[in-house]
Length: 436
Ligand code: ACO
Image (cartoon, rainbow, N blue to C red; front, side, top):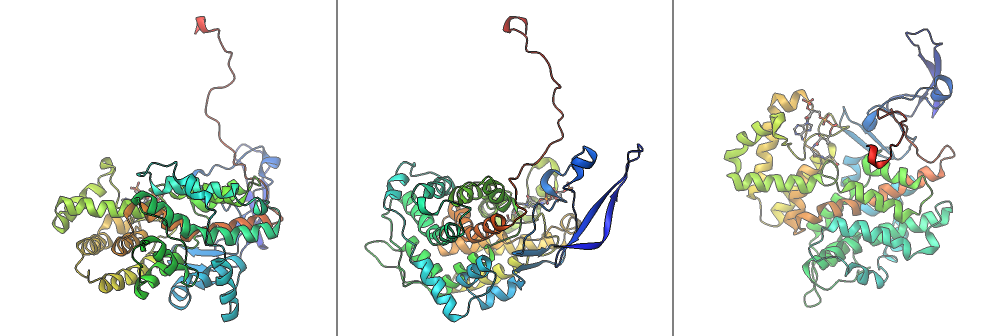
């Protein structure tokens, strides 16, 4: 970051002296006012619940222009990456800053595939869960548990440890998600196959059984790869900020990523694809497309508490570029599987059309987000609804780890410690029990 030509001056109406603060410019996006010395100079904090106007770090990984509907990974538009690159190239880009050449890609893919197996003890750990446990409950536990297996890569201040932990996490997430699925089905775990692509191996571990092989369809493989690519990173969202805050204490990478998994689970974040599909299924049960108008009235009624899941985004105030790509993939997958007339897809299209024309959504700049279509794609492939968020976590792991490593390597990094505006009781005396 570099100093901008101007500075910000904060003045007070009570005659307290005004304060000058430096302004910094990034390469694109809004400038930031440096308030680091504000407390020392004024004895005041800033107040910004939900971080609506606060940049908590500098980052060179992902850039979003929410008004334009633009998403760049290391400067490359998501539309180009989704079409011209696969997930392994995207992972290389996010982790190391550059797209690999053919040799670099082969080396990186090989490195990842060398780490796809998990310790055999992991299955015994899994056995402690109920068979009907939510996959995200399982994933939160399993990812955190990795730190108990890799004592040689838990020192976050050691660059070699960070590198190998990154590769291990990227490599093992598909294995863990597939294990979580197989466990809930009561089926044996399927070991990874290193001759398959990252996405192909995931499909294989999910759907093969010891008695029947699974032939990976190139269309579905590409669709899964695209889901991974589109979800690989998304700037300083809730789960990424959680990973950074958690990691800022110096905890090991596996523990920090487990914190990200836990955060992602929420329906306002990664859980939205599951919530979106449940919503579509509920409308379908109510009567399908004929009930869309009625449902939309509920969404617009603030007292109903009903939201149009898969719509709206904290940053995008335009069409989420990932939603367009996912809609394309959705059409391809449904055609491949002969599901072109899938009622949920038709319902989703009808909802989208109404919402894009309705003043409630237009005036609030609410557009479909990536989750609006990713659930339909996953369901068509055969991925059960409760596993959707775990698939998202798998894909986002590279973004989390790239952001965590960037933070640890930043000389300005400090343990995160937000402040507060205290509104509770002032100091008071504890009365003996009999007098209260
Ligand atoms: N349905 C109906 N109304 C909505 C929706 C929605 N999906 N999203 C926002 N609004 C309304 C709000 O009620 C509010 O209305 P008001 O101004 O009359 O009070 C206005 O739009 C602004 O919404 P906020 O909640 O202030 O927007 P915020 O940026 O805080 O929320 C969020 C963003 C959480 C994503 C929200 O749009 C939402 O809950 N969407 C549904 C869940 C979802 O799809 N999440 C996925 C996010 S993408 C991801 O994690 C990959």
